[in-house]
Image (cartoon, rainbow, N blue to C red):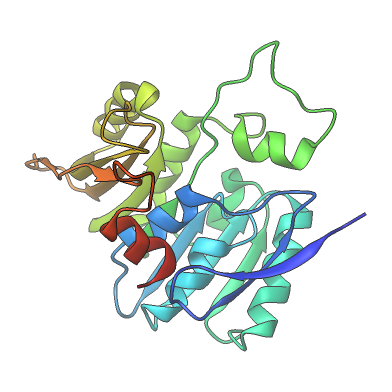
Length: 242
């Protein structure tokens, strides 16, 4: 049975329809929304969009046309409902298809900003898909791979335009290697820790498409909880908008 809820990321004022039985946005989504700096006009793509939470919320930051690319129909349908509920039909567009087919909808070298919260985990014999196949596909590389995602970003992104991703530190070397191969130069990198004593469990990356070399800035870590196990001041501002 579907359990539909409506949630808002931080102070975006954009209502996101979610099915708690399928997949819901989490801290990764909120952090990427805050980290991304979309162009004010032009074309924005949310790749591996899920229910469209990031792309839809970015409508509060930009007047650009926003395209949500999601292979799973159940999640794409939720994004379509959110587009309608927020009266964003003229700005945000949901595309329910495999990212391999993206050029049927979006020409190469035409995207001004791209955001992506890709599947984090490789497929292995422990990958659980029976109980919740939608969640499994969102989390594991069952329908695409990191290499395919980075290649797709390179194809559609304009020269000197930015892509923003959230990923796992344990696969960071693989991610950066693939990016450089595809002429996507990392410009900003920020690690996220649940507390100052814990290892980083997320990393935010801002990359630019360029044939030139680019200097990489590693920003101060974002620590979610302080020593009193309360949200840090910065994390509270990002998550709750205050």
